[in-house]
Image (cartoon, rainbow, N blue to C red; front, side, top):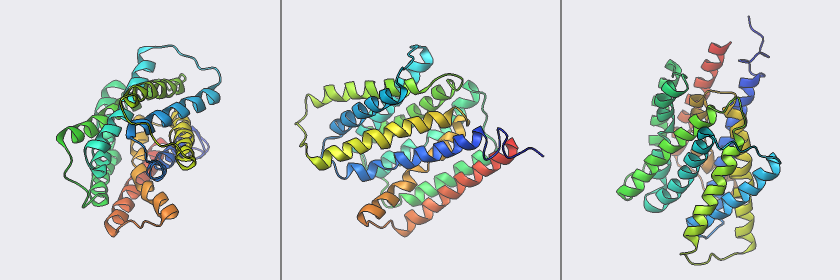
Length: 289
């Protein structure tokens, strides 16, 4: 019987990858809390967040290696597009629609990854998809519908670009994909800065600056480091499924910091999503062993 210390074991590279992806989802989920403290236009938030994240990653990497290969640039552009599309979607449609439509990502990864990465979904993945969809429906019940068609399309497109980002990053598993994340934040900061030139100047105070620092360093800076650690060790599809934990953690932070209690549907939906992801991950571990 294989040791738990092996590549597929809980303490092996794959276990580290799963833990890193869960940590990444946890940090991504801080966005809702931090943004509550920043009364800025979405593009101003995007600029500040990505600019600080780029500085953080430069300090972390120290000597980035830019190959400007199609895969490296593809990952950077698709991640940048994801962040910008999600900003527009949050402005043009409901927050629930924006999140729910974006998280069609695991299905896109399953379909595209089967051809590009040769990482075909297994039975546990398809079952997890069904329960994640059910959980998402319960989680956002009452907040669905409404919004503009363009906003809903932007959120759907963000799910597709996010899937492509996962695939491009996974293709760099033998290299150094963190430079793609750095480039993505530089691209996003540049585009957002141009947009900010045509918008009112945001009000800058200590609370806003602290929140922007939190967004840049923790919510997407350190999250990018964990994502790169995870995507090098687990399949793109597993990484995408674990990432679905992000909207589940989001209201937890808000509840702990501000006392806003999630409703019973949100609790039930979140429980279903967590169970689907955990069980799918455990079954995948057993297959690896």
